[in-house]
Length: 305
Image (cartoon, rainbow, N blue to C red; front, side):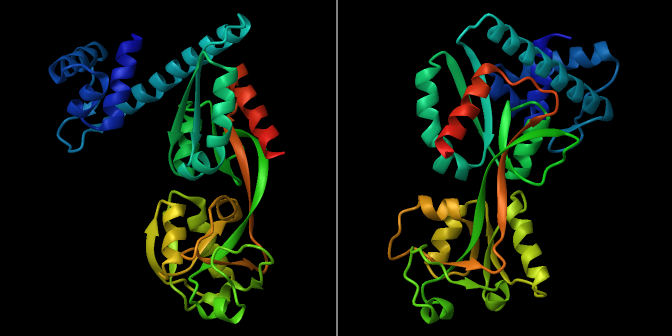
């Protein structure tokens, strides 16, 4: 197998389209199609079901993609080990993180890291928490930022910190008026029960985020089904919509502390009992962590301290 063939098949499988993959690979579609056809002839089986739209992998295609990912991952780990052994300050570090973590956490670490490691190409892969776990499992990131719980049979992890989940309510909500809460104020938070807002519509994180399940678990424990007004992938959007009076939302205190308070901010409450979640770094079991990856993690820990 040639590395070029492996990468080309993986890109077609990712894009589910020869034309889209060709654009990303900067080659012509006919050239890409011809290369895949020759590979299929050599294998003796089709890798893609061309009768489907979008393009789908065949059973043999899925086997090929699985092996291709393993081969490229092993090659990448070998290069990292060689670079470390030779003490070369070059290479590539790929980190998986949510847009929220990138904005409010990694953006403060990356400038320090890039100054210390000028020869390291840094790549950020942004996605939802569940997809970030997939990227780490497939070796497409050196490590990803995630949350407990995780599959301990698949991942090793390092704990970073815990964050409390707060309830954000519109400033004109009866509870905000009752407790005389000011928009954006997160000091001396009054504690309320989640069932106290059973009649309030919720703005929910989408299913790719663990916060989605957390809200339903809390409501189930309180024996009510939440009324979902809308779903979003953005915590910033949820926060802004609550401030605009659209409904309630469950948000991490790290987001609340990092945002600037305005008259259009939500009002915040603690929950009783207070839900917490643990932020972690995950990487696939047995995966080699390069010196730059270890250095980035050390910088992150120092910043958090």
